[in-house]
Length: 272
Length: 330
Image 1 (cartoon, chains in turn purple, red):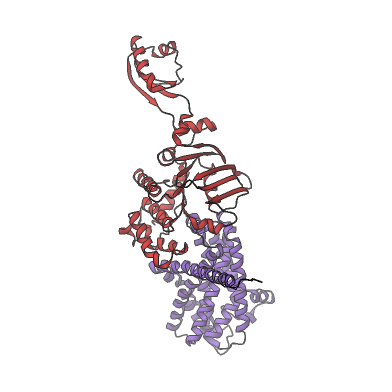
Image 2 (spheres, one colour):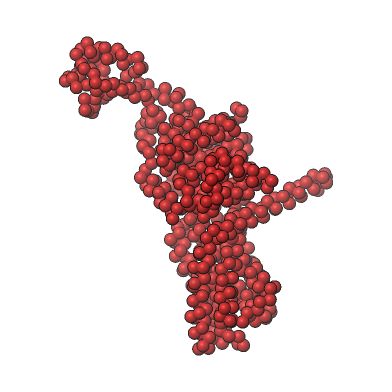
């Protein structure tokens, strides 16, 4: 259509520049989130207490009484990916609180007054939550290894797990950012976070197989993104059975994309 | 130089229950310090937020340096720097990092970044503390850091929403000097809002007075004040019957004067004083003190709107500000 090829090339260059700038802005936001973590990493340690208790208390006891059929794998092996995912979920689902806090200060207002497009901010924050999730997951993995849980430490598998954690962190932090403009205060966000984490966790394959559930709960568990995340991580870390991994990845990616888009669209409402 | 930096035409912002900004129109000249003065809830912040494309106008047009903010919001934001009313620095990062982050987000080229950051740090006298965590900074330093963040973009226009709110008098003065210097050295256009008449008077070349969403008056502070006719002259005297003497001489004493003080509304008070003192002495009235109150912007506001701008911050606001600082500094 364009009769001037030189101009067309320029336009393409401009587009490339835009994409580059967009990505670099996303990474900038993530970078500074990590710098905050570097200045004060206390929260990572505090947040690893709960998964530690799950593995040490719940895991040890249920391994002993063998009421949950986990095939040829020990119960601790079975539940480790579940607890891993849970620890990341806690980081992500309460991420909206920090967004509300930044709104209460003037931080968000100022961030939105920069030339950076709105969706960059959502994506940058989501990615930050994902990367925070990795740090959280590492503490759980290390603990599992200390407890002598047999896990696949093939670097490719571990890398795959980290990839899934980033996606999952982005997915649930976007969900949290969708909720933030609705609930608006930190206290309410705390409440809603607690209200949804429990059903999402227990109606998943985190600590027992879906096959044990009654029918109605099974339905919920199969639309629960957490089930797919755990299934994929379990394949990578424990079973080595990759027969569902395509479906798992597809489900996680779809949920993430939908929620990121939704959050980008509604995010600005938090200011009003 | 005389290009208009901000042009606003019939701008309206409606919220479900209230019209926050009601058909305002004005223009700001490039390189001037322009202030919107008015009480809390007058629509000043809403106006700034519309100019910065943080919220959409219900009706009307606004442009920054001929760029329509509704059509090209990102372009408009590129030219602007913004210091919001609330604390907008991140306490969990160092001062340097706070500036670096904004340098990156504003797209300051990598090769220039470090130099510009050092420049603004030096300009605002923050070098020494630049590697300290911001949650150890004082309120005044945080405000300076916020200005530094905005300046790293070298904005053509800087928006300051209540720049000295919550600051102690010393810090206030520093910030004022800084703003003036900024305009004088770089001819940056400064657009600020304030409810502090003193601030508007000391700082602004021109002000617009806002009340209940309307722009009720606009002009240079001195000119606005000269529109208020008459000054208040106070006379203190212990001589009995001074009140009636004054009435007899044809002055109207404002009722409710106390402690031997009598307030008169006069025109051209400065040249009246010697004459009045002379007359009173001849009539046997001993005058202990005289004072003349020049009209203030508050009087201008009173005349335009029938109410006064509240003195200082409301206590709820002060409390909120204090709480924020406290949380930020643990």
